[in-house]
Length: 417
Image (cartoon, rainbow, N blue to C red; front, side):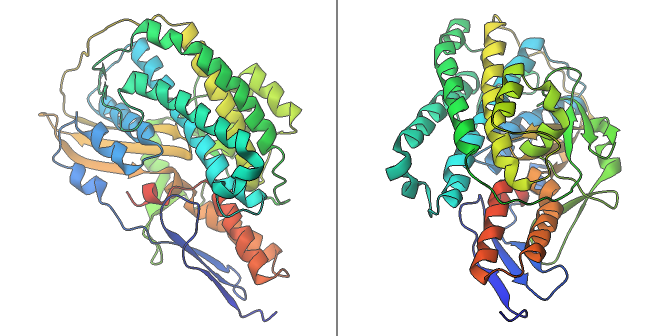
C-alpha cells in the first residue's frame, strides 16, 4: 500500500452532530477531526436574557442531554446570585440528572456503538438477531424518560426547574409508584452490562489524564471539586485559572487545554477516578464482567457507560425510597454577581459561567462542553490508533477510527454551541 494515501471520511455516521475525518498516512500526526457542525452562538444571544430564561434556552443546545445544560446553567446562576436551595431541590435535580444519564447511555450503546461490533450499519440491522434486546431498550428508555418527565414536566426540555427550586414538586405517591418499574429496569440494566461485556473491543491503550468531579459522598454528578488523575484538585471557582479554550482552523469546535496538557472526561474517566464511590452492587457487577481499573482503553468507555447505567438506576431507587417529597416555595432574591458551575453530563464535564446584573439580566455567558474538553484527547487517541495500525488496509484503518470516535460518544452539536 502506498503510504502517501489520504483517507477521507466526509461524514461520520452514528454520532451526534456533523464531523469529518482526514487521515494522511505519511504524517507523524496523521489525523484531523474536522468538526463542521455550524456554530450556533448560544453564548452570544444569552446576553440580555433574564436569569430565569437561561435554563430553558440552554436546554436546546442538546436533545440528548438537555437536563445537563439546564441544571448546570441554573447552578451557575445560583452561584452568581448567592442563592441557597433546599436539600429536596438537590435530590430532585440529582434524580433528573441520573435518569437522563442512564437514558443517554442506553441510546449510545444500542444505536451508535453496538452496530459496530456486529458488522451492521444501524440498529435496524440488529433487530433480526437482537429483537428482545432492542425491545428491552425501548422499555427501559420509556421508564427513565417517565421519571425525568414526572419531575421536570416533560422528558425533554423540562419546564419546572428554575434557579431557586422547582415550580411544581412531583406528587410523592407518584414517585414512589415508579419504584417497581425502576427495579425492573435495574434488572434489565444488568442484562445490558453483560451484553456490552461481549462486544470484544480492540486491544488498545491511550495513556491520557482523566478528569471528573468528586464530592464528599457518593458518585458526584452535580457538585464537587474538580480532580484529575495527575493530581489536580481544585474548587469549581478556580476552573478558569486552569482550563483554557483554544481555536483551530479546521474545526468549528474549540479545544480545551489544562495548562499545557489536556484531559479526558466521561464515563471511563469517572469510573477510573471514582470507582470506590459506586454502589457495592455495581462494583460487584463490574468485577463479574472483568472490568477493573486503571483502564486506559477508550473502547472500554462503552462498558463503563453500561455500568454507570445500572448504578444510576439503583441510585434513583435509593433516593426515592429514602425521601418524602413535599411542596415547597422557591425562595430567591435577585442579586448582581458572577459564578460558574460544573456537572457530569453523560459525555463528561460540562461547565457554565454567567455574569448577572442587578436586574437579573445576563451580561456575559461562557459554556464549555464535554466534547470541547475531550477534543484534544480524541485526536490524540485517534493518531496513536492510526500509527499502530498503518499496516492494515485503508478500510480497516477507517473503520477503526470511526469506531473509536463512537466509543468516546462525542456530541459535536453541543461542541459548537
